[in-house]
Amino acid sequence: MNPYAQTAAASEPALPLENFIQAVQSQLDKAQTAMTLKARNLNMPLTFAIKDISLDLRAHVEFARSEIRIRPAGANDAEASVFHLVFAAITRPMIEENAAALAVEDPEDRNIDEIEGANLNEDERRQLEWVGVRTVGQLRDIEAKGGGRTVQRVTGLPVDRLRAALERASAPLVEHVTPVERAPGDQSEGPPLIRLKGRNLLGGGGRPRVTLSGEAMAVVSASDRELLLAPQAHQWAGELCVAPADGLHGGPATALAFDLTPFAPAKREPVA
Image (cartoon, rainbow, N blue to C red; front, side, top):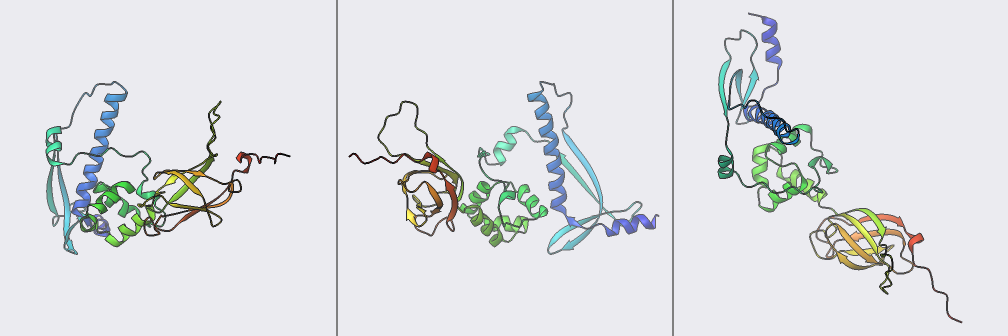
């Protein structure tokens, strides 16, 4: 028996059994995805398929905080337990019968990693990914359905932290302020407009309040990602502020300084 091997094995940290199973499943999913890309994009035939995987895991079993934890065994460690794991292949009908349909992901939805101030470490992000939460939209859907406590029980993340992260992600964000150019030959008499692009601009409520240096700006149309504004002649530069309509939804207001004076309509000279 090698005493060094036993000492090295004993120094390895124990991890929850479900983490090991999820990690194996995640790597098998990546292998399956790689084979799918090969077949669909490179037009190369699949020459083999893996039906089942059998794995014997030799490890020491520990109990901590009402969960089973395993620690890898060293060479010739006779006291280690043996876990016999079999990963069996599943078919499309089995997936459709036992899992909810996957929603089409919004290409503009933000990743959990992009939430400022969320302070999620790598292990916490991995725990969320294992339960299928990778984007802000998915986290928002779970919270709307009352699943926050379930996510807490499965991942160990306090539900208050998840809600705080969601509140930060739901705050309005202004990304671009640009003039709306008229099409060639457009002789319409409507006022010149400014387009404001961002996220969460409605803040979960109605049409937001937009001000420039404290003075209200007219909102022509509003969606969660775009506002059309009709500025007055002196409202083409300054600090633009977007706030929820009732001051209750979507968190605090957001502000952005801009200068579009080169695009402001020319002042008409008075007729003598």
